[in-house]
Length: 356
Image (cartoon, rainbow, N blue to C red; front, side, top):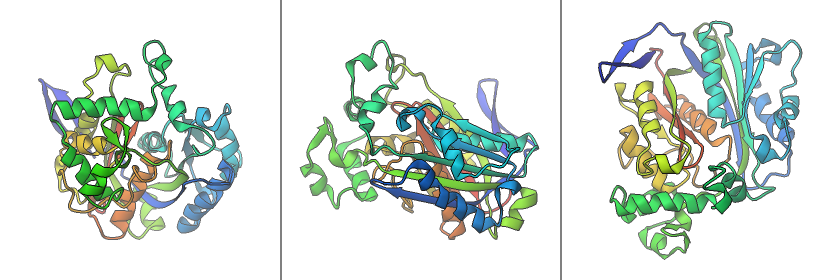
């Protein structure tokens, strides 16, 4: 495991004796609108990853989930979803009120403590019953921004205008991204689309979806038993920028840049990059900050801009990176997750088919 530490004003690389941990099974589901409740949505996914590994709940040392009580509309809604796990006391369980990628990080830390060898991580979101645009407005600064009730697209448009005016991104780059992600067929179709929030067009903005993700993690001692080709976590980190827009440079994402550096993204070639970019502007900006090619050699397996599941899209990026390794599409893949307004918080995870 390679980490970064700050020494004499420079990022210096060092090697720490960390426990090797791998993703050994994943399952996911996304639909525009699901009639299932959260428990019904997660039962098949959790059952699938257990079946793939041959584990039952008594074999799992730690369970961690990610979701939003506010989105679900009830306090401690994640407790209800534990019915999908079928917990049998005693159970070591935790929850993060964030995207499941941060539950994944907490679980990785638990492995490093040396107290578990297997873990179940899952997350879910069901935005279809309400207005997600209004819900996301409530996460903004409660004194200066939230009272104005700007919807998520309008906030993203504010950042997009700054990026275009400073020539950090161009309209052509946004059109290229829209074509690459499949939201339009060509530049002509992109330019003909209506503006959702100037300068963002319909193809620049995400379509929301209900869904969930489940995965099993295992230590080196167990991973080879549970999976023919474990996807090893060779680097992981997350960083946070300021919450208030007024103290941030909205044309940069330093938290993504630092997380990528600390996770060791530059330590070798990246075959597949799964980015949690809900807007075309975010895709272009993240590639600049993380040192990735502007035009990837290989496409993502799925794109949040086409199906964004709040609280699960980040964990799904990790699942897709693991699948790329298992399917032979990548020897080394990077997964990115983000949370908060305008990519305030960023997590980067590097997976490899080789145990390093």
